[in-house]
Each structure stands twice: as structure tokens, then as C-alpha cells.
Image (cartoon, rainbow, N blue to C red):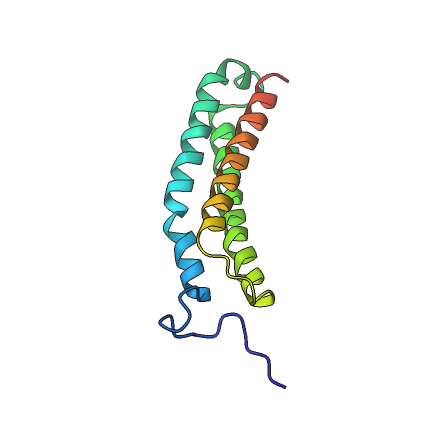
Length: 125
């Protein structure tokens, strides 16, 4: 009994929702995610700078914002990793593209909400 790896190459003509198609779909949207999250960080820092400047220097705020953004980008991969896992272990369900868009939007909204919550909370300490 041999088990195939979820990352084995598959003919996309035979299986239109192959693993690599899933990863490519998510990665094509990574730049939009990063730009929207970065814009939210800049907005939150600028609007809350009167409060943040009491606790952080400009350099500290920039370093922490950069680290936050890098962690968010790393966690972005959880979206496609979860879908790859679901497709591998639950093969009988045809997910289509609808849940991908919903997961992407929910993840984006969660990230933006967390950004404003963290910067808003830090700004009012």
C-alpha cells in the first residue's frame, strides 16, 4: 500500500484543482494582501502616532511594523496549506473556487482587524 505525497505532480488536465493550482491561486493574491495590510499599518501608525510616539521611537515602530508584516506574510501561507491538506485528506469533496475566495477575504479582514486592534490598543496604552 503506497501513499502518494500531497505535493506529487499531477496532470492538471485530468485534475483541474491540483495542489499546484491551489498554491498558485493563493500566491497570485499575496501581493494584494501584502499591499492592503501594509497600507493599513501605515494608516494605523500615522493616525495613532501622537500616542505611539510616547512609547516608541520612529525606528522602533518601523522595526516592529516590519516584523509584524513578515509574520503576517508567513501566516498567509496557512491559507493554501489548509486547502492543500483538505484536498489531500478529503478527496471526495469538490471545493471549487468559491471557498478559496471566501477564505481569502475572511483572512484579509481578520488581518486588517487585528492590525487596527493592535495599533489602536498600543496607541492608547
